[in-house]
Image (cartoon, rainbow, N blue to C red; front, side, top):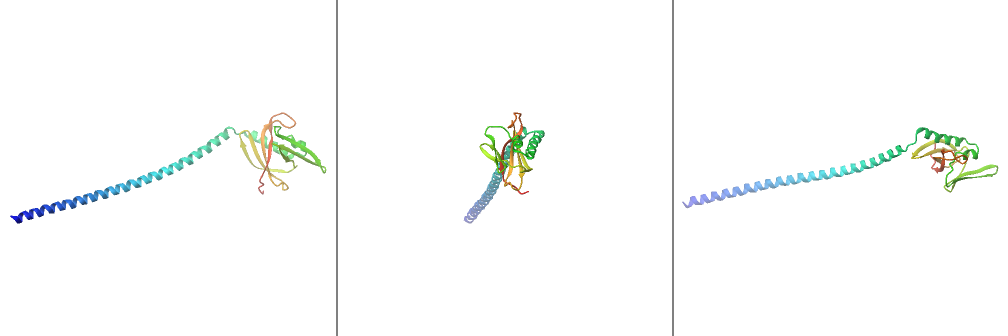
Length: 200
């Protein structure tokens, strides 16, 4: 009988051990499942973070593009009609054809800070214009072809190539203004600036 109790006790202990091992395996499997779930969630979080960063970059790019478009729209709202642009070009073509300083001076706007100087040196005209207090020497037949233009609200910038003896190209800032000899407001040269010469 004692043997039966020992066998019975042994069987119970064996069952408890088996249950404990199985429970440990179940816990181990559950822990493994939890680890896998944690890793999956960590990957998903990293993916969301990367997607957020990409979306933030795309949003920044979109904002910059919208700003550029708004600037273009604003520029177009104040765009000058073609006939106005053509009239400004015609003014420069007439300026180019001028054979005397007096003729050229007729295309210069009469505004504050502008003026002209005229003198004679060695039988030649030592003449020029004054824009914002800066002198600009008039050289006949120095303006060649239109190279580029830009419209800025109520002004037009026309950049022209110049003759070989002139070291820089000219940029004419055009505006509607009265002239040196008449008060009619039409396209005139408000300023001439020197810009880097590009070989042609």
